[in-house]
Amino acid sequence: MVYRVAERLQAPRGTFDVLPDDSERREAVESAARRVLGGAGYRRIETPAFEATELFARGVGDSTDIVQKEMYTFEDGGGRSLTLRPEGTAPICRAYAEHGMHRLPQPVKLWYLGSFFRYERAQAGRYRQFWQVGAEAIGSDDPAVDAESILLLATLLDELDVREVRLRIGSLGSPDSRVAYRERLVAHLRAHEEELAEEVRVRIDLNPLRAFDSDHPGTREVMREAPRMIDALSPQDAEHFAAVRAMLDAAGQPYEVDPTLVRGLDYYTRTVFELTSDALGAQSGVGGGGRYDGLVEQLGGRQAPGMGWAAGVERILLAAGEQPVAAPEVDLFVAVDGGDGARTAAFAVAAEGRRARMHAQLELAGRSLKGQLKQAARVRARYVAVVGDTSSALRDMDTGEQTDVETETIVARILRERGLGA
Ligand code: AMP
Image (cartoon, rainbow, N blue to C red):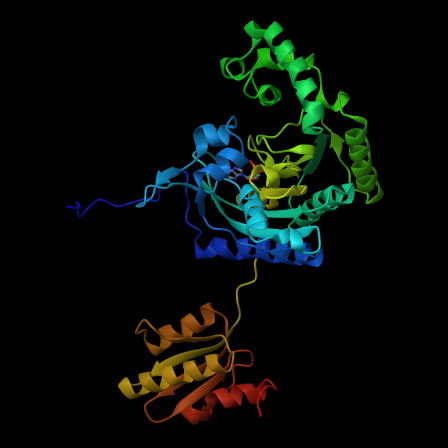
């Protein structure tokens, strides 16, 4: 292949680089997740970035936008159809079944953080590769699992200072009650077919619930009069929903009940919820999820109820606003004031410092001594060692005091001064 020399390559549309200046805020999301979720007994899991396409076709559902038009699907060298994961719940349910996690104490509580891929219209807050933090609790249908899971996401967003958060919850009932409801909804949509958006009309049979998500004015008008799942819940489903609400009330968590909340994935049963931030524009969803009592079985595992959510890391950061992040501390900057011998000796000092668990930086750009001291100040080094061919000096940047020292004793001196050495 011939490449034109002058052509400057760019990251694909809808993707972005996480630059060093961005990475500290993202790490803060990870540590908050570890603290909040770990504290509630959730343990981290990572699944592969790609899976058999069938997992998402079966798990997420053939009628969903994700499976119909958003998956990055490819054939590998062995002719298998694989898909870059568009979401995390189906893979985790696969892992639960594959590793026989039903033998562990239930529910099995897992959290994850990783990147996901959807071929979507790229815009602010919506990307083709994005990161999600998520939590799943599999193996219990206790409404306390639902309430706890919702509360954990609300707590995480709160810890990360996500602004103007609103929680909406709803219930989709269980598949049995949904069948009868669905028939009534389809009948309503059929009766008003002319007024519906084209994309809703063609999916009346495939996915009638999604009509609730439409922005189309005619469709919205029709949906105002549509029968609502929440009024058609079985007594058991209604009781479950009431219990979840009572627990959120007891925990002092504000929420609105939204009878039109359906969410875009087919696997949900009973509780569904969404957290949005009014600080975001059109893409206001920060995170959401729900209960999926049939999913593990649908993927070939034993029946196991589940509940979980995912939140977008980029959306969290957009809605959290700017927060000062403390620059990492540098204990020692090793400057060179001499020839090759000094350079090698300086290298050894930095290596020894790192072995002693110091954050140590070495001059790597051939700067003048003045330039090196400037660089040391820029990285806010606590100590600067100036290593020469025959002698060295150690400067305490807090006090400005400089002492001549034997090169070999630099690290030991710093440790001693900081009360860490022998
Ligand atoms: P979902 O799996 O669609 O329920 O998405 C859960 C969360 O992931 C959303 O609330 C967003 O915060 C985030 N998210 C979903 N899709 C994207 C995307 N294309 N770009 C950025 N974030 C996304």
